[in-house]
Length: 260
Image (cartoon, rainbow, N blue to C red; front, side):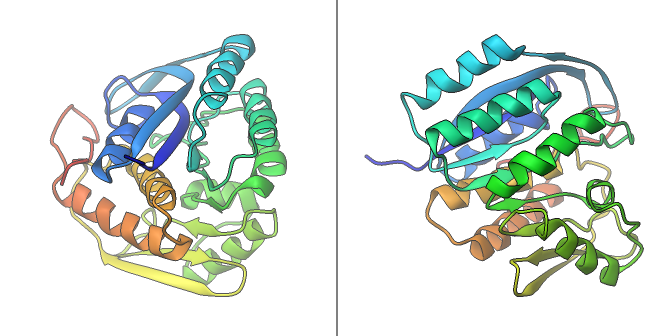
């Protein structure tokens, strides 16, 4: 039996709502075989991140190259990349193994507003990894930092999408959940056309891991041979269902329900 395969390169969230654990749950929900290479261990729960321990160059390189010389995924997604050493190993491995369908979720800023990576690392990701990606999926704070532009309205979102596209990715999905209003608008730019995905805002605080889950769902559908536009649409619909049936776990922002 040939099963689609997806690889997540991300950190570990012990609470299970975000990071590589959320990615694997999402892959499974789409009946895609999930693999994971760990960039870092984190100490976090639903309301705080209070520690990050990286894998280190030698062992991280061993992880990723050992799995890739044996199993080639149909798509790859990156989540939290904690330092420039990790980013460089990812770049080298992508080039060496000629991997396709790269989804970059630029996990840079926590829900509490803290930077999860040094700015030098973020700049390396933008310069080296963005041009290799099929799609990048920043939220508004991340996109604002990447494009060095304040986002106040839908017109700004479109402008920022175009600025990020100019940095090399083949597609840009800017997630609009941080904007105020009763409707959330996600915007996809493929270099030629703008696509809008409008959904009514769901009144819940339980949104921990939304970005990880969305990018993993896109990755899973790319593994199944779906086009980018279809993968994005399916992923957004899946995340909306997962939020509607989210779990009231923990004292902070509870996790999505990955099996809605």
